[in-house]
Image (tube, rainbow, N blue to C red; front, top):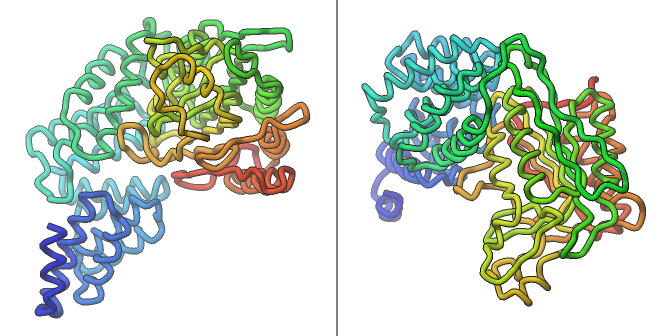
Length: 495
């Protein structure tokens, strides 16, 4: 479609409305590829030539996908002004509001076209965020019925994407309610459908992680049971800290507003270069978070089994949190574009899988990918390539050799974009090496722990201050880096 439209445009024989239509269809082609910048370019030219409701809606959707929500709302406003009233455009604008005014637009979309499953899926997420799980499940069920009975025929809607979205959102509502049997069924249904687009693949990545978590979980505790997460104290002499089994959390309604953090510091490596600072880095950050009201699960010098268990316990409980923070200090590495965190017992031997000995960062990101929660992931990792000597001597997969630093987290290994409502920060830029520092803490964690608890400081402003301090203290040798799909201002410390 893109090539055909490009050739027609190059002929320069069409003008006005006809040329606008060609630019519109090329924009549709770019949209299918996820090339939202080119969508906006072609849609803008189509609007210049001949404004229409469809092209404003298309450009607004592209701005939404790029995270430019205010511009997207303006385009949806213009689309609605051109009329007639459209359920899908009200649904799209409700998406772009991200909370404020969202429910009003979603309700209007449902009134205008009760056969559309997409607004019901959005309202499922809205009810879940409000803790009204029965309404969430009811809307999710109706959305799934509609998606099965009348699959979307819109050329801009990827095949199966609506049904996959319906199942994952209902599954999350069932899980929040403590109905793990139905949650498992929906997660399995999510995974049993062919995914053709990035968003659907991201939903399936989340379903895979959540399915394993609810499959491992014991029977749910009563709704009024207290919610808690294991807090693991540590001492300098500890070689390994593990979380005691965390009580299964109560449903979302009783845990709304809860802020949780997973803090891991690995430095006492047994087979690769040890690091002096991660344990003190982790303790400093954990202390700062506790002081501003976070419930913290803390682990120091964890082997793979302990690190995996603590991570999975946290992911299970964080499903009921409003804000989830993950902080890791220690060795990290990228393999084939995926990032891995390294436990203290990592050892590569001939004939063993390299990545099996490490913790996949994509798994953590997928487990937290949920638009009703804010996720902050911070990694003071990749202080050098700890595996180079082992790779050279063991003769194992050598994909790690040429990769310095960690990979930019613009996508999960599935190819899906970073989940909405997530900020991920690295101590240094992608592909670069972070410094361990000469004092008790790394330059990054020292600055982070100083600014983390500053009252009234929005999280991205806080990271800007951290970045400036690290650049100054390292004489421009290290530049912290972050990527955000946050949907609004986030304050970790109360204003």
